[in-house]
Length: 151
Image 1 (cartoon, helix red, strand yellow):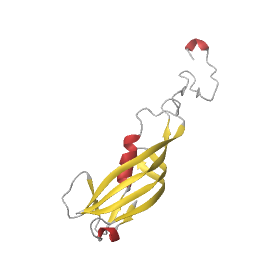
Image 2: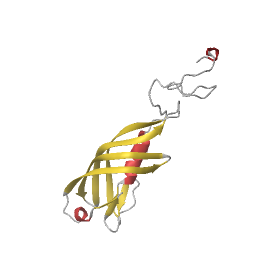
Image 3: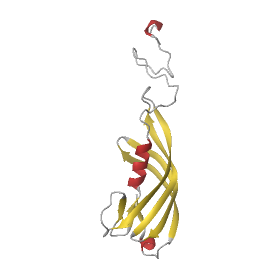
Image 4: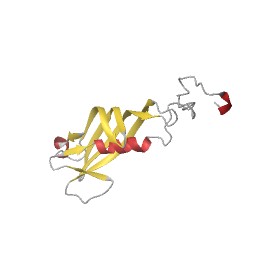
C-alpha cells in the first residue's frame, strides 16, 4: 500500500501526522495472507526524510502443523521505519520516498508479520493431530483404528 506523503514531506522539520489504517486481504508472500491489518500510523518529518511508527494488529490465517486445519492467528505490530529522500545514499534499514512523494508501508508490515509467525504453528497447545494410520483429525473425529497402535 502506497501512501501520498507530499504535504508532510514538504513541511518543516518536526511536523507530524497520524492516520488510521485498515487493510484487508493483503498477500504477504510465502503462502501467508493477512485477513485484516488494523492500526495507527504516525509519521514525522525529519532531516532527509520521514520516520514512521506503526502500532496495530494483524489477523492471519495459518495451517496447523499437527492437524492441518486452518486457524486464525493474531500478531501485535509495533515497529518504527525510516524513509529517506530518493537522492540519499542507500541504507538497507531505510526505505526510499518515491519521486512522486509516496511511501510503501506494505513491506515493513509484511516483514514484521513474517518474523512473528511461529516456527511450530499449532491451532492449540493440546492439538491431537492426525491419526498416523487412518489420517483422521483426532480433534474432531473418533478414530476407528485399534487401540493397540497407541491412539
